[in-house]
Length: 138
Image (cartoon, rainbow, N blue to C red; front, side, top):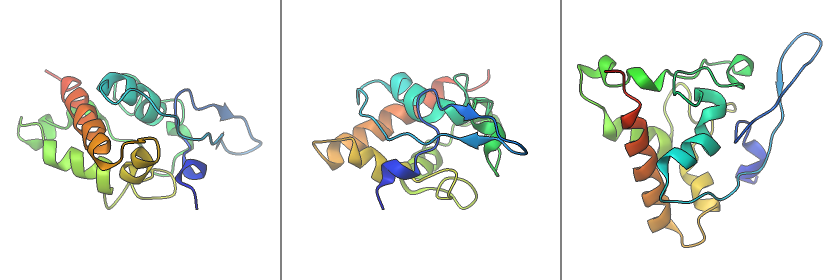
């Protein structure tokens, strides 16, 4: 199964009205600049987590598990940003959200849009992590 077919929340995911529930239009993953954490966040994360990272993206109402408010990660971790936890969630998924049908594990997807392989994936994940750290509530 191609990872791109499982993506449901990329750049400007469109919510399609339905009779009783909200549906999400799936779109394939597109390559973005690997050096821009903000650009990748906008392309890969914002449709669920929102541009501000608060879990209020346009696809959020259609998900079974509400997206995390990424601005509260440090606050929920005793004031320290949990970089290793975030990196793992992006790369390998988490038990309750990433890795589900609604929220894929991004490591393999990032690999699919990284022609130079694993080193570029690591750069992408590192830059996404650094950007998410900038979103932390003060």
